[in-house]
Every structure is written in C-alpha cells, then in structure tokens.
Length: 532
Ligand code: 16G
Ligand code: ZN
Picture 1 (cartoon, rainbow, N blue to C red):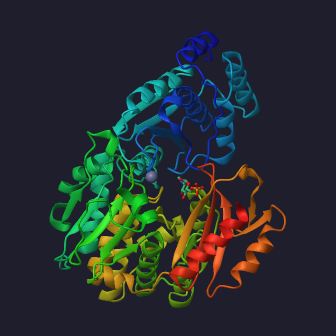
Picture 2 (cartoon, helix red, strand yellow):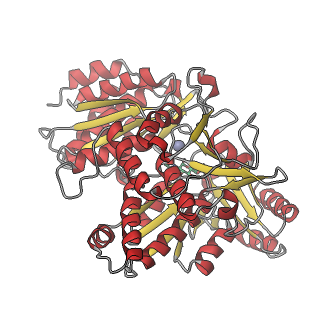
Picture 3 (cartoon, protein in one colour):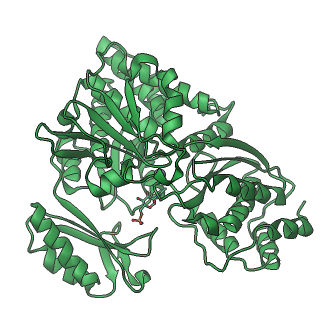
C-alpha cells in the first residue's frame, strides 16, 4: 500500500522551505506561508498513527489559536480526544524536517518497522480548521498527506478546536459503554445545551447581560449556531464577531489580550451592571471580567474559574453523599498564589502543580476521581474518572436534597467537555454555577483577592540554557541563577518569582508576585535584570 512514486509526486507539490520545524506544546505553529509541507506531512503522521492504533480515528486541527491572522498551525488529536502522545510529537518533528523525498520515504519506512505499523490496516482521520484565510490551502495540503497512505478522511469544516476534540472522542467510542455523544457539531450543541438546561432549571435568570467577546474568531459563528439549542436558558450579546475582515482576528480582543493586558477588549465600553467573557481565536480559552462600581476593571481568569468549579463540585459531592469521590485541582506555576491558598485552606482540596502545557495538566488531573485543571490564561476543564462517573450515575438518593445534588453532578459531567479545555463548555459551566448560586461576578470574585502579579518577556541569546525543575518553579541551569533569584525574592513581602523558557516563543518568561503593585513591578524588574 506504500507507493513511493505516489509519495514523491505528492511531496513535490509541497516542497520543504529552508526552516527547521518543531512540534511544540501547541503543535506546529508559525507564519502560514511556511506551513504547507509541514501540514502535508502531518497528514502522513496522522495516517500512520491511525494505522498503528488499528484504525482508530485521529484528529487534525488547523489553527493558530490566539496568534495573529497571518499565523497558522496544526495539532493532532489522539483517539480519546486528548493531545497527541509525546513520542509521536518527536516523529512529527523528524518527519517535518526531512530535506528530500528520499529522506521522507526512508523515515516513513523507519516508523513502519520500528513501531510495527501494519500498513494493511485502515486509517481514519477527521479534520477541521479555524477562520484563518490560509486555512483552505492548508486543508488541501493536509488532504494530499492523507492520500500518501490512503487515509479515509472526514472534513468538519470551520469549527472550534474543542469541537474537533469532542468529535474524535465520539467517533472512537460510538456504540461502546463509553459513548461520548453524536459526532457532529449539532450533537455537541445538543449535549451541552441539554445539560445546561438541567443545571439552571427552576432558577431565575440573571437580570444582567452576558457580553461575549469572540476575538473575531470561529467562536462567533459557532456560539451563534449553539444559541437556538440553548433557547431562553441563556441570554448573550455577542461582540467582536467579524470573521470577514481577517485582520481583526485576536486583534485588541479575546482572552489572551484581556488576560495579558488586564483590561477589556479595545473599544468595549464596560458598565458595572453587566458581566463579560472573552474567548480566544479557536475558542479553547475563556476569561470573565466585570467593572466595579468605580469603573475598575476586574479579571476573573482561569484560576478564578477553577476555584468556582472546585467549590461547586466539592459541595455537590458532599450533598450527594458520595464523599468517597476525591476532588483535586491542578495548576501551573502561573497560578496566582492567592488562588492556591484559597483552594488549600478554604476548600481543603489537594492542589498539584505541573509544568505549563495542557497535556501536563490533563494527565495529572486524571489521577483524581474528579480533576479540575485550569491554566491562569483560561485554558482548562474538569475530568471525571470512569469510577467517579459510575458512582455518580448509580448513586441512590435518600432525600430530596441528595436527589438534586446527584442530578446536578450528572448534568455537570455532560456540560463539561472532558477531552480538552473548551470555552463554550466552560462558559456554560460558569453560567450554571452563577445561576445556581444567584451570584454576580463580584460575589464570585470575593472568594479571594489576587496578589498583584507581573509577567515579563526577556529576549536572550539562547533560551535553551535555561533548565527548570519542580514544575518550572526552580532553575537548575544556568548554575547559580536560582540562588540569586532566591536572594532577591526574600526581600519582598509575599514575594514569589520564577523564570522559565517559553515553549512557544523565542523568549524567557519572568513571573513575579508580591504584596503590592509597586513591589511586584520592582521584583519582576530585578529578576529580569538577572536573566538578561
Ligand atoms: C501553549 C499551550 C498553553 C500554554 C502556552 C504557554 C497547549 C494546547 N497550549 O499554547 O497551554 O499556556 O503554550 O506558552 O498546551 P509559553 O510556553 O510560551 O509560555
Ligand atoms: Zn486557543
């Protein structure tokens, strides 16, 4: 089934530019005009992965998330909707860097023999893309990649990243006891909306308006498409929904802008009556915010969402009388110190810290019966173990209060996209909890007060010399630098700071937090000075 002439003919259509590629924490991501060969070859990797897994469906998502419009990228999705396994990221990297058709053919042969891939097995792939103008041409390259080893492919068109993850899991679990849902966007909307309706049933709707900034990305048309399924259970006003003028994508808007700038989208007039939320360009990140009475901007980021979700789930587990179900929260070093303190001391919930990147958080969260994980930047979800789901679905009520808690827990497990962080699903989760509690964002915000924090980028000669341990909280190389950092941090009240090389940009990031704004800024400045 592997015809080298066929490979050569197809590969000639997608020549490799003079660039070195790497499958990083967010897949391959760069200027779209460099991606043609990479995406063609990603199609081959996806095909091989599917054959290796006995024809299980593999997903390919063409997106560059919160990056600017000229960028694009590709991520592969494993059968249960999770990120591609680590060892295969390395294969994708090697294949993307083969210089000639001969090298490419040789590497395919190497993979087939070392990984024992049976080429007579079928391959099935499903793919989608965001709204970027480069998407169409890159889809064509991907399809050529599928032709190399005859993968059977399904095009889901323009969709959000989490919708693709959802579809992959649905396709691979259809007809099994773990069936996840209908593998269509309509199936996705219906599943989320039905669960949401159960979660808000009988509760008065908030009189304030939810204003939803879609970063002029795919979240806009897709959330619009979900609204009829939600009916009158949720009132939303969508803003930043221009996907025609592609220069507007993620521009001065969206979750990344709001989180990093600590302000609302440019041009959006905020008032203290309403609540606000922002998606990023592929709708896998969510942040909330509001304006205080005096007009001060207040951010409710991924840490705040994790705290809200953990609080609600812990109380439901207790009320349902299934205390044997363990709940845990997973964060990264970027989590605000006040949020970690709140989780540990107020909620008494175990908190683990892992390196940046969704796959680390997801993996760690699966160690709990119910694992809540969020990055401060708004990417996160909740995962339920099979045994937790079994307990939740077989629990028997001995009081009306217990019956309510069990019903809500079941609906929560349905409204949450357990495959990956999903802005739609997380938004419905937050709205459900606020409605259940009849809380305003301000009441939600009162759980704890964020310590002032500052994130600084430092451009260095060679970021690969920075080596971290302890979930990126300590540097072991360059030798001596951590001692210098510690000595400075000690001088600041409530001081905390760490330095790590970025996984997505050619920079080193410095994070600092301290008791006051000015002390935080000074701390960040002094640590950055050490790194530079
Ligand atoms: C990637 C990660 C994101 C992380 C970011 C950090 C995934 C799907 N995405 O975008 O979770 O926050 O990288 O970037 O894992 P950095 O290494 O440049 O700080
Ligand atoms: Zn994203």
